[in-house]
Amino acid sequence: MVPARSGSIISTASVSSVIAATTTHAYSASKHAVLGLTRNAAVELGQFGIRVNCVSPYGVATPLAMGCFGVNDDEELEKLVSSFVNLKGVYLKAENMANAALYLASEEGRYVSGHNPLIDGGFTVVNPSFHMFQYPNDS
Image (cartoon, rainbow, N blue to C red; front, side, top):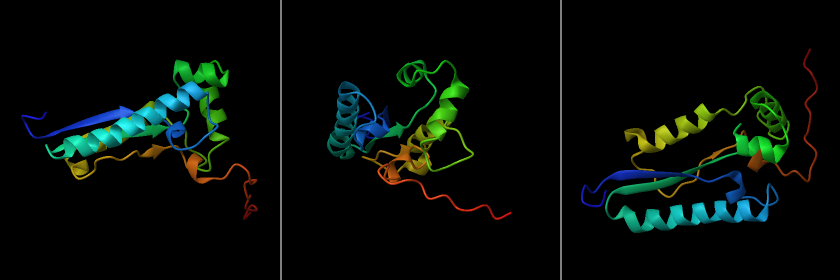
């Protein structure tokens, strides 16, 4: 990439890279490390036209996530994760992560470097210390 003076490096971090108490200390530390490495590499490699980003999901149905949440199938995990996010009626799928990575790798993302898009249904914008406000039904 350096000789070509272009390229795109994309890593997978996690919402655990930006907020605390979502998982184990070891997992959280490793995802903080991914984010730190992403930012440092973006600074170092930007002079060569190389973009470096990571994407951070919350609760994609993978064997690791299902084990952490103690569920047995994709749909069960998607429903559980959906109960914690503020964006309702949509489930996070692996293809959502792929689409975010495709954007970062594409020509459309050519001026994006050092970023960590959170693909989390708004999970990280809600303070879990407060109860969610429920709007009354309009019907």
